[in-house]
Length: 211
Image (cartoon, rainbow, N blue to C red; front, side):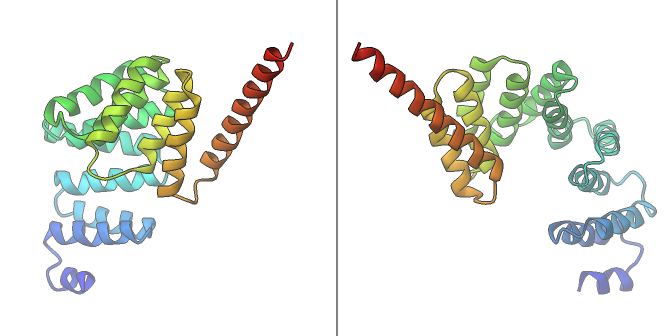
């Protein structure tokens, strides 16, 4: 139906946004890119189209292209919190430009201070900087503030708990993440390795007590 609407009214950029977003949700990323670019050919400064194209590029792991688009959104709309957060989180994920990542995410949080996903981004940037107590503080807040339970936030929380020496609590967080996303093989491995370490610690402790 959206395709038909675009065919009927091909000069309305917002229709390309709706159709491109639908392709994105269906994981048809190439078609999403094609559709969003078609919309931008009608209005190259349509910030919602630019932002959504950046989201698709991020999913396609076209890092530099995505960052460029999100930064152009910020130029068009300096109050666009999600664009600040996206760039900051992408830097944090890559372990690049971490000081700038913290600043960008901080700007997003100035605009939306209660956004749990932005708080998660800040916590993860702190984690990547090696600021583990700060990361743990923010990631605990992210769990509380997120609109719904999110597997990525619980995964990040588990990592921060482990780095702060709270491995049993880390396992609980990772298990929650796995419950929300059972396909996450990397988290299964973290849980298994952590449980093995905890068992070794208990065995060593018992061995020392019997000496």
